[in-house]
Length: 287
Image (cartoon, rainbow, N blue to C red; front, side, top):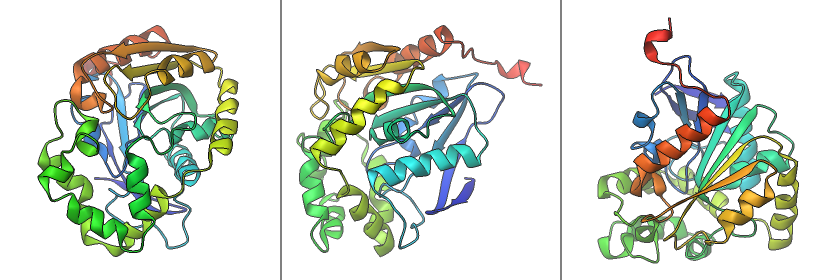
């Protein structure tokens, strides 16, 4: 897997390559690129790039003084896009919604489109039951305790925790991979705790949300009808907030739509891309 050294530390990423329009996929806490493993193969003709951000599932720790707050990681994502020389990017978010802060920080010049898939928004940082995770991470040794608890199926799969993020269930080997770095590395646990406890206060979050009205490019909002973490009303509210927002609701899914309904998500994403001028480039045409 290729990597790049950024101001906060090393970031590894998956890149499918090709000459098609560029899609950059972000992930949740403490996930990695495997969050999108069912969707990317359905996007033939697009160059899909999946960085592993320092949200706790990253394999190499950040520098001790790195800003791995929600805002800091958003800026790091922007730095990643810039350093790779990517333009006209379609930025796709699921679960973690902080990538929107590139807009509120005035750093979204390289982003041509946004796709917001059942993600944090407005003052819902962190969402629902994830507030308990943040509280645990604020305690010394809390992340280590969390990684141990995640080895217990009854805790890991509980519907009020990570088990509630997917109606289909997240395979144990996938979740084990997400938590493996924090399980084995004290420095990764440090980054995990810094990010998990970094959500701004409600007033700040809502002020940042108002700045999103300045993003005048196409936005697709994809919301899950059975989501336990992202309020149902946030889908239409987001689509209305963005000047060129549009909403698609997907039934029979919780937060991790890429896990529960990958085919329907890929179809909605492809339709949106084609309608907004990002046609796929078949491999045989990529001479």
